[in-house]
Image 1 (spheres, rainbow, N blue to C red):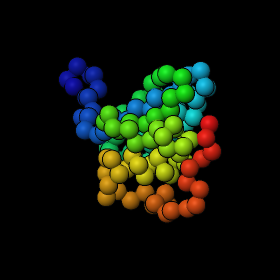
Image 2: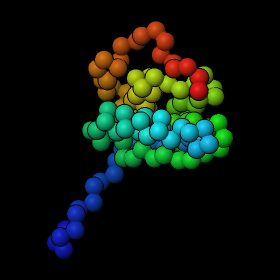
Image 3: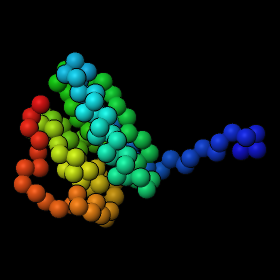
Length: 112
């Protein structure tokens, strides 16, 4: 901008919302997953990753309003690579995740 202000970045990517139970102490886990997603999808696929306090026992991940992981229905917390795959499938299905695309036994972490 002519006045020295930074030019706004064009927002084109998907919005991710991680809703978590603050009383369950899941903020740190949520922040970790936010960092993983922002690091993996650094080519404009995501416009934001938001952390949102929610009701007791809640831990969900939404992409543009569509739930891609729910701790209650999916049986616990995801492994990082599984969450990345689900987010990728929602925002850029043809994107390769490299080693995170390789299937391995035990893709779901223990319930928390």
